[in-house]
Amino acid sequence: MARMAPANSPYIGRFAPSPSGPLHFGSLVAALGSCLQARANAGQWHLRMEDLDSARCTPGMADAILHALERFGFEWDGAVLYQSRRLPAYRAALDQLQATGRVYGCACSRREIADSSVHGIEGAVYPGTCRHGVLPGRAVRAQRIRTDTTPICFEDALQGRVCQQLQTDLGDFVVLRADGIFAYQLAVVVDDAQLGVTEIVRGADLLASTPRQIYLQRLLGLPTPGYMHLPIVLNAQGQKLSKQTSAPALNPDAPLAQLRRAMGFLGHPVPGEVDTVDAFWTWAIGAWNRQQLPPAGQMASC
Image (tube, helix red, strand yellow):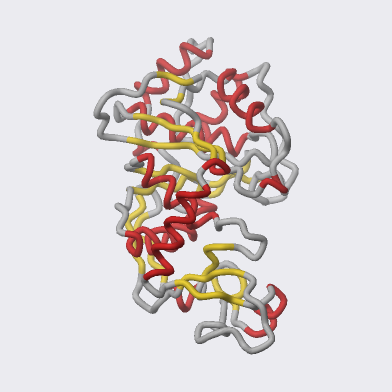
């Protein structure tokens, strides 16, 4: 449910699900943590649908996600932002990067990269094959950003100090995919700046993406928000709960039990007298304490 954003709020947070499948318990933990961090700081909390990859989005799923959030008592500020409606903003950012010479065309396929590179923190490290131009007879497939060896470091509110050397750990990364879709790393940076997000609270599965986003923020002259990466929820097989691991959807007909469980996962056991969704939110906003969150790096089973 949308609400009127507080005027001149110093804190702005957000939750950004992908409408490729229904919300699951891991989604609820991320949404709850980001929302309570915003509300406990008397701030705004916005919703963004990350629907750029239309082929992966399920028809009607964005509305289903909004309906589920409403049943769980979430209230967001302002209108929902849809990435699919913001293509000109991403194009403008890409044009800005290209104008500085930081972007170049790449003709390499995934198989070619896997066959010719070393292994990094997220798989194959791009070896820079097309950095100095595409070989004759090859067609450009994607656009990559030039990285360097300067360490990108930040202080995560829960995980502590995190550093990456992008060129060594990841290589030059894609900002415009071979299918013409703007890459997640670019879109999220542009969107967070447009909203004026001051802190990003999300799952620790996205921790490794943060240095790339900070790098793009610096190249585009955008502010860098604070970050807090929450523990990852695992299934019985030790896999991260996700649509890819067939995580069961939230049950919108029984929100209170799932909210209590998510709050407990985040280190805040809910008193027995909290027996309605409205009572849960009143209690949770007042009880929220970052110091009670599970230890840095913890991954827990649901």
